[in-house]
Image 1 (cartoon, rainbow, N blue to C red):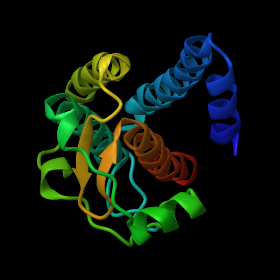
Image 2: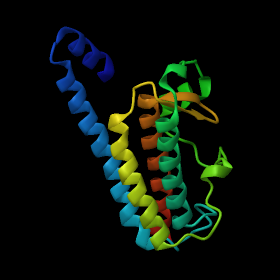
Image 3: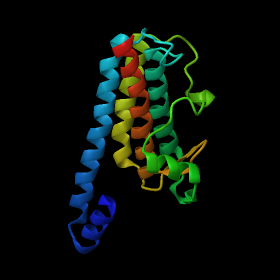
Length: 180
């Protein structure tokens, strides 16, 4: 709904770049706020609660950072000319819910932490994520990555997914910290 209103404003307003600059500022703030929440949770990296998740807080944070860094790397390497939107019922369903159900999907191997992580490792991945988030503003709107369930996601859809995925794992982290 908001996007439709903004598009109408942009089509009628020659200063449309100001609107998109404002929206980009909001989006970047949201992503940076999520990274701040990850940073705040790092001291709890060893906590776990098997009634909530088999993984530790460190695993959840490591996974989230691997996803952020891996996806943005794929966006930067993609050829925007090859992007083509296709309907996907799984993506539509998750967008409608705006929530990832727990325990329904398995993380692909490339974003599954393999070793026991350390605070230093998490901090290094967090620093990379901060740099990569800043890179998003410079990418073409049709930069894309291929999600294993949702198909090709362009820049806008990827940002939606990054926020959704990170919030999902931060909810798990917060549950472990508060009940662990």
